Image (cartoon, rainbow, N blue to C red; front, top):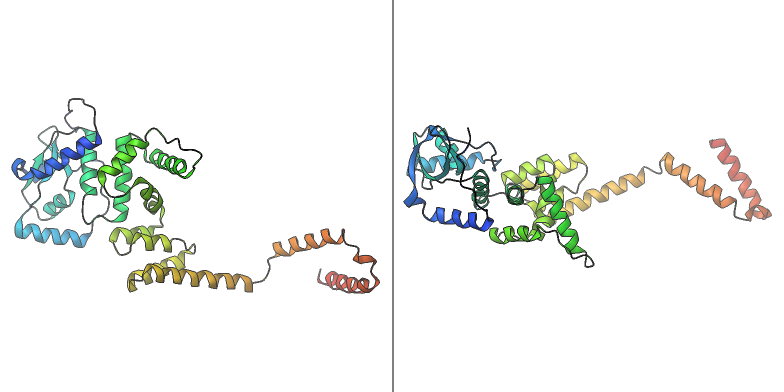
Length: 311
């Protein structure tokens, strides 16, 4: 099942964003109803995490007032429609077993459908940091027609070019990246690279906590600095249960690192360290003239006898 092709035209990010905004403003006028069974989900879903508690609240609201915001769909073959935006409303309607739902039908190309879905998702008020970070990354990937890995590489190149005063030649795609971040109005690309992009590499438990909204991303990044997995999980549990501030979390981390340092020092030198120290001593003995000193010869003899007994 494929979407109906739209007449080819040059796509501009701002154009689709403006079109989406105007669609939102005219939804009441343009909306109609469709049987829920005729609407199908797209193969590539821009949204990953759904708050079950939030979904229950939405279902309760729909039971009382109905669906106030129409779903955006695009026509497919065989009298079917693909959902473009409004997946939470679609899922709630499905669980409530509604027969029909209000929709706005838009004839969008595959690329435009993905972009509108991503933009709509990024405009949500309840967006968590992981969804926002991944959503922006996916939008950049679609707009630049690059893989996710290549987008990350491009952003890294831009950062290096911006950081290096002696190398101010930015990649040719940098203007498009800047335009996208300006259009979204959420943050600069520099802030995104510095503060957000690394969130996607956080351990699983921290990612889940961020997705659930149980911890702020600044706190999650601080906790991620702890390498010991058990200590990391323990501090995460404590931070979420007691709603620790960022400064309190940093204090806990400092205490853990201090205890770890003391523990390592109390263990003494490892065999590898002993061997390196012996090598250093041997090197020094070939250079010194203390062997000729009668007063020190007795001390050397005594130390050598002890060492020979240990070995």
